[in-house]
Length: 322
Image 1: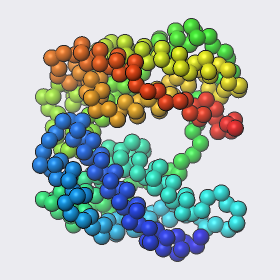
Image 2: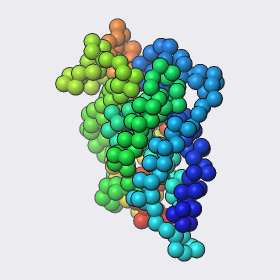
Image 3: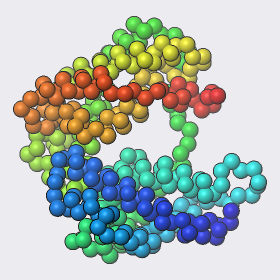
Image 4: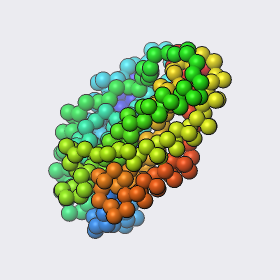
């Protein structure tokens, strides 16, 4: 595909990309409001926005063109053969949906302050917030898209060094239990940051709201241990024996367990606003009259939540995957 053909392809199809982008921004804002239990006129208007008026994409055309030109300058390479694995359109689609949209949601490779500004400016530009200035929002998007660091094309995960050592279930359990505090720290930090980011997106101060907004506060993470140990036993029962029977694993059982918790399970938990609050209540980061109930709720959640299968890339490096 020639570069001019590629530009024309994106021009002809830009509506689908922009509608996806608006939908992501709307969801991110409403998710933040739900997490903080905010019920305002602004939130109510955004909930009904796509039903009460047609959405004009015109204000986003110029910012989108800036993004396209930056992508072309960094990543576009003319196809010279008939046997290339992916077309330029496929590469763009994968980059837009799997990398850029994730970046704009603040989950990957971008400072949350920038992500929040982009989300708000997109919503303002399409007049989802009628009291704000759409021209200023459009100008802000053009500036951010011109200056932001584009994330790299997805590559092969580096992972951990290969390990062929066999480990018994008892050895695995003991080592995993000894490292529970690192998982607890990551769990707490993920929930705290999601709560803080939601407040930042909505422009709400957390002053006086427990210690969740205090970066220097220290918390006893002991109340999270019961839920994590419950989760560990479920992981062992469902996956550990199965993994031992697989040949030539690239990663040790403990590395696979940690990668599963960080990369598979934590994103699932962060979709559950009530459990985010329970993590923060259990360690007294959010005020609660009944922190023990939050702790027990977490244990129940860890005991009942559906565990997804362990993906192959957590077991094998790409070079060894078949």
